[in-house]
Length: 464
Image 1: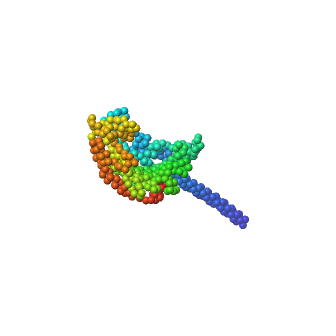
Image 2: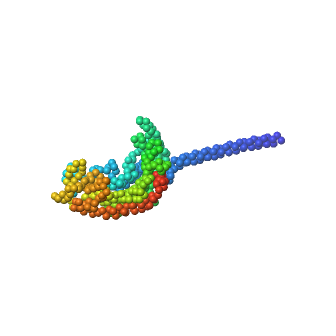
Image 3: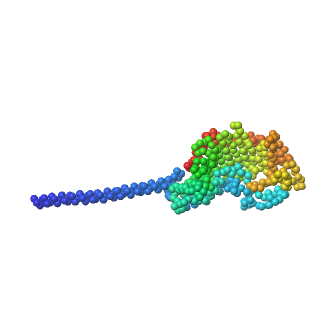
């Protein structure tokens, strides 16, 4: 009996030991499970941070790149976009004069009292398309290959993170600057802003990508405001399809929340296909509309024919203000009922200019053919900055009801033939309003000002 009890007691002890070992085993399993769960949670958390860090609205981003890697691609894209500007548009304001062109010939015409027709060597460098110098692409030259300085070193700038600094200048003004970037191979988004003259904030956003037609595309918004971003001098959206077109929506001096102030501006340029040979321009067409609360006005340029119409609204009706013709990028003629200008280098029948001194007049020449003076009552002048050629210009007095006579338009006053007449220009003036209204419809701008304001803001605030 005693033996049996001892056996029973021993078995009970074994059971207790077994239970303890089981608990310890289960405890180890639980520890491993908890550790595994914690590891998974940390991994998920880290993965979530990484995903959030690279997420953007524009493209899938599978890897993180350094700022220098990004900037190499961005600088190249920006440089190519700037090349589009210099290919299709006239010289920028800082490069407006033709004297610094590689092919410029300094014939010292400034010092000559007598100039022969063949001495206008730089005629082919002429560019009178100043009406196209409103393009937003000119802002690219201001930032090309320039890194925006911020407090962080470039090695510390991480993709997807937003960097922003506010400081105070020695004059007590607030200075803001900052950036954020995303990149995946050749597609990128870049948002940055910086302060100019301690008073003005320039805020850019870029998206470079390839569209469904395999064209390189740049979308850019630019907001120019005071430091507090409460008053905007200019808000704009530009879409550049390389080698195809440029389209821009602008709101000048606008309230971002109201259409009551400011004005709207729209531009569209269609570039030509280099397979075609266009006699008149290196662009196919250009339009620019200024939309004010009370009236509209604009410019339509057909690069295939070299014709330009400036149209304005008066009492609810559109009318041509001035008509122009160009050869390549150079003005042939401009006409309004009160003003005429004709490029004389395209007119035969004369061979030299002789400077004449007239009180209160400068840049005045008489026209000669050989030894024959063509007129002692009418004179020529000379373009010499962004273009180089002689021209005849005529204004009638604004207090006079008389208009420019046909004799002046045809250049009969010199015994020459301009190829133009009063009836020719009257016919062109009738065409201007028709073309203008057609373009308003084609570009979806035939709406009220308030409706156009809402339409513009959809583009202007795309990256906000």
